[in-house]
Length: 93
Image 1: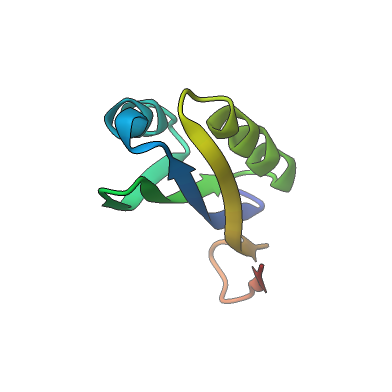
Image 2: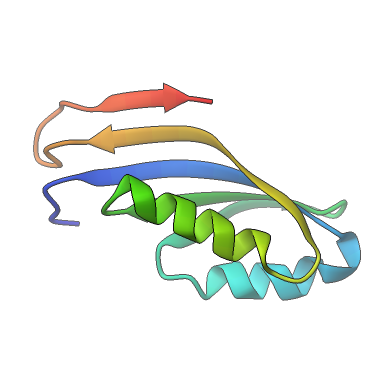
């Protein structure tokens, strides 16, 4: 990804178990999102790669509006100011 700024964040999404498969499909359809883990009780770990911090909030709002989603919480956020350098800022929530 060739960006002036890249935001890498992870979310924990809690879903009603009966909506798990549907919600996984909807999240997989978001080009900035990748599912890294799922359990049968309805927890999904999602990693986002976005260009701006504000876009993270938009994606969290989209996920929260999906059927069966009980909540989506950001648990990690890293900002790569210059993707080709080793400079980065990490925030743990």
